Amino acid sequence: MSADRSVDVTDGALVKPLLVLSLPVVLSMLLQVGYNLADTFWVGRLGQDAVSALSFSWPLVFLMISIAGGFTVAGTVLVAQHKGAGNDDRVDHVAGQTIAFVSVLAVFFSAVGYLLVPWLLALVGAAPGTRVHTLSVEYTRTIFLGVVFMFGFFIFQALLRGWGDTKTPLALMAFGVAVNVVLDPILILGFRENVLFDALGLGGLEATLLSATGFTGMGVQGAAVATVISRALGATLGMAWLFSGAVGIHLSLDDLVLKRETVRRIVEIGAPASIEQSTRALGITVLTALVALAGADAVAAFGIGNRITSLVFLPALGFARGMETVVGQNLGNASPDRAKRAVGAGVGIVVAVLLAVSVLAYVFAADIVSVFISGEGSAEVVAIGTEYLRVIGPTFAFVGVFQLLQGGFRGAGSTRVAMVFGILSLWAFRIPPAYALVDSMGATGIWYGIALSNVAMAVVAGLWFLRGTWTDSVVDEAERVTPAD
Image (cartoon, rainbow, N blue to C red; front, side, top):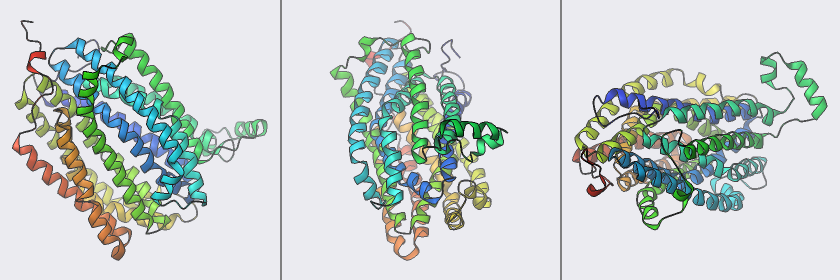
């Protein structure tokens, strides 16, 4: 471990540096899910309409994040491969260019998304004029207003990950989650029947604050405000560290002036990743619309199930992000065989973990789902959510394999390959079977469509990986720094 906390992944053992890189990413993603679960938990105190509002809103928020966020993958790949090649000056340059380019995109999509929210929510299945639609509009528009701050932190994570430092983003994420956890119950529920105050034995203080302020909470919108505030604080700290050079990357204002050739390379690598992520988000939107055909209870169960499975997949997603760094730096260092071995090691670890998680998710499905909703109408939501976990749970390991392979492809700069597999997984293997089964089986048919796609996408991506044609580096041979240099 160097003084700037980056990990050397181009020499020596493979498993240990992969674990050192990936485990902080897993923890960081766990905290990220903590954001979503905290929102779902506290909003769940407001009833089924509020939970459904978040379920309708999430696909649109995820779509917006994915379109611009895919370009942060280019930052990870370029930083990793240039570091592996010994081009530290180029690292600073591509990092600054990624920040500037993605920030411009974020502003554009934020403005467009804010204007189109009511119409888009109606397309997803939230009927205009209903309370669910109104709550969804309030929540989604607030998130869109703060998307620039959200992306500031995502960019920081991506660049540091490419550099080989995953501990600093973890610390910053922990800070953001702490802020969000404090703000969520207050902004959502205000100073009335707030279980957080009761748990801390501060019921008297709560009554005093309610009397003094009259603040009874912002409801669903309060969850969005809490998220935006915590992200803004994290983004500000992250950018300050990058410009100070405290994290190994040393940015200057000149690095933010967009250069045509660098932007072209960012687009070549980032556009396929953006398309992959946005089509996946669009696929979730389509699935949400299909689930809406089965009723509001099914939508609420689907939203809760998505948040639970996002927690389950953290090991795979974390190792996939770590894999981008390991593969990228080793290909930049002209070591393709080492990159392939790293992918194999990561697949073995993740499969072992997810097999155990599958058993737990199946056995305790009802108990897990019931944590996230209570009150009127909760019994039916719990029953549908339990079925969701029991159908999809046995396929968790296949999802892990697919994510690890995708991380290897992206780390190599083969984002077009990852894009193709991402599109196939949804639009060929998942949505058509789900659509075919929803009429005869309701929400259950959609769950089986998802399970089928989990298996199919792992098999197809695995066959392509074995071909070994994905290991070309995006760093030219002339750009590499040799020991003599």
